[in-house]
View 1: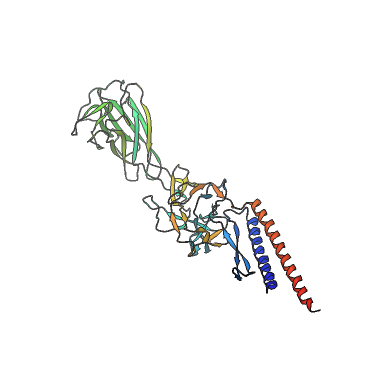
View 2 (view 1 turned 30 degrees about the vertical axis):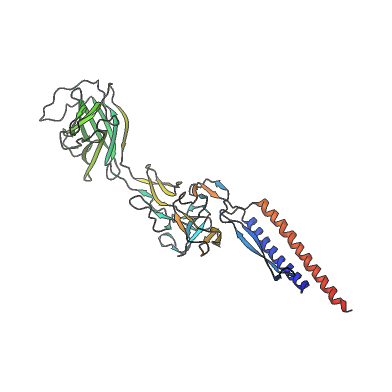
Length: 453
């Protein structure tokens, strides 16, 4: 029984070392596979009988020891859609079962991977090198991701619709040293034909066409300027316009309490024609003038923001003879065509357009497990959840203990070639040693048979 047991044990050793060699072979073959996790070998002994007086040979079994939690090298690449996870976690991916374009049918099962070599396919989906479709949270109209469901990310918004201008922000200084104009009758709020200060602001109409708004300024007295707003091409009468008197310095009396506006800053705005001017209630509140333009597509209401009452942050009137603009911005945009897509470090998938605008269409989350080494391995560096791995926890990158996203990068295999060759030598020597046991046991059995001669 001991000789047969020794031979059986040696044969199990041959089988175990053959499996270990298979693990080494798989690791070496996938040493350059993106996101691959090596498989080590865990040898387990099984006893036939063992006590203080007797030990009988048993067997050995080689079990896979998965390394799903061991980080591979993060390498920067030129692909802007590539991502690597630095730390724990996986990408949620889907597998297509057929169809194309709007009719792609996806497997109902959920898959996970560390292979982040994603690129856009012909239908606009983000797909990695193994054919798995990246999933994410879709962005809602309020700009927040819908964290209730995951869906394959598709870039389909290839045009950015034009947006008409609704607000203008102006920060400029009106030169306090220009001469004042003669008194203007109250019945005729429009000012003389020539304005000492005039500027043009570019805005956009409902179709994305660029239009102009002219601002003419007259200095009425030491602290007061008159503004005429004329939307060029508008249907207003030629001599008309939007008029307002702007008082710089003095007291804001709309209180209480009464607040002194520093000299040179806006104290009050008095509408003189078809306009909406804000009346201050406290220092620092927004000073603005509303006007309406019509470029043939209906009335377009625009708010001209001039900073805050009593603050030198917007429109001011300090010394000088030249009108100077510190900042000018407006929220309208022309028609935009698709120019590219990038992924941000928080997982936002941003579509860029040639009009300078960006639209966030999805956010890439990171999925974590209590025991990632218990995941079921699949083809293409993919995994599936098992009972032993625990539930999938989907969360934002770099939160709740999951890793952060490294954009424009991929995670290489965690295989160390030098270590694998060391394991190869050990497996080879151990296999050879087991063959010697089989040979020795065979010779001893033969000697036992020959005893009867």
